[in-house]
Image 1 (cartoon, rainbow, N blue to C red):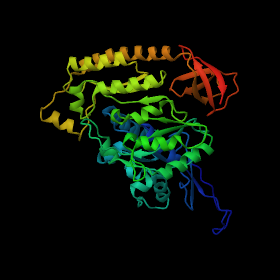
Image 2 (cartoon, rainbow, N blue to C red):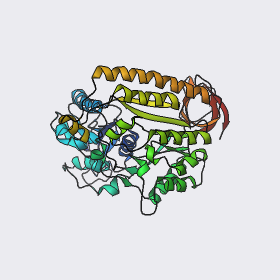
Image 3 (cartoon, rainbow, N blue to C red):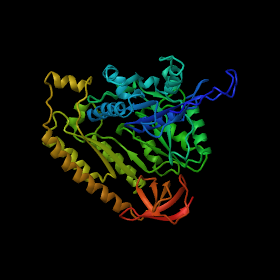
Image 4 (cartoon, one colour):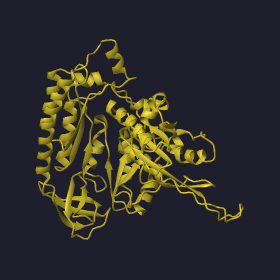
Length: 453
């Protein structure tokens, strides 16, 4: 912290220097947490009449540390608590403000931790800049606006920090998966009005972004009075003028409708779909309270590939769900082996308190799978996943895709293709961060520039 003396100026001098405070932000978890953290960093409201604020480069420099937490797994909770302890150890003078999903579901546990100055729920998260400003005037608490007015509040994004823009369109979840705490952390599904989304698309275009990532907790549940569903929203968005495309961050299997599948080849849609299955065993899906048929999902994937042979289809799989038998696991393993996924996130099952599954475990309705069995199944699935990814790369090598330049200035230029392959190009090429190009890659993901857009 630096303090500038005002002793040489009269008290009434309007040019009197302000005290400088530094704030360090970091987050765990999903893209929604990432964009919400960026919004806090970019907030112009982080100032008051007596104090100015700037983002700190490290915890050591900070007067305030804001930790945006995740609670999707037990491991995430462990990381949250570990981060709080490390910050308190590194900089015991910093005021630690904890927010996010874990702060919402387990507030009391965090408040009892040493060094925590304030705990802020997800609904209040966008008020944190105002909160910090008020703290400096001696007010620890602040009245926040209703959730609908704050959770979609956004601040300017720039190519200095990001090569691809984030566009939050939805929050909350009405699904009740038996193992998941996120509905408790995020509340009921709410959707951003189309006019607000439209304005931000125009703003992001003006900032020269060529890719906009549509984010939310369950964007497939998008619905407003004027826009009936997510496919209706996407149809409106792709009709907006400009040279850019949207990436759908994640979509539940039941939300992958024929209308959305038909848009896979649209210029404004990246050929990328992340569909979190969690399992391909009908019995386990029923225990998870996830109501869809794996065979119907397989047909949807076939329809996508028929329209676009290079489409990226990724998924999430939970291994070792309580009650999962070897037969149930093999159903998922065979599904993965036959579906040629471009990316698979594998999660060993993690027990979450306050869920309906946790209550079934407590009363003995279900039993946990032994840890050694879970680890062995994870390794088998990883081998299948690695093979699937390599097959996808070989299949798409030589195809031409659009791509965004992520970084330049090193020994190579790093790019992300529209089908979400991380590739490199020769450093000698004259390209700028955020630039939209066309390229192809080989089996080692070495890229070849075809053209500048």
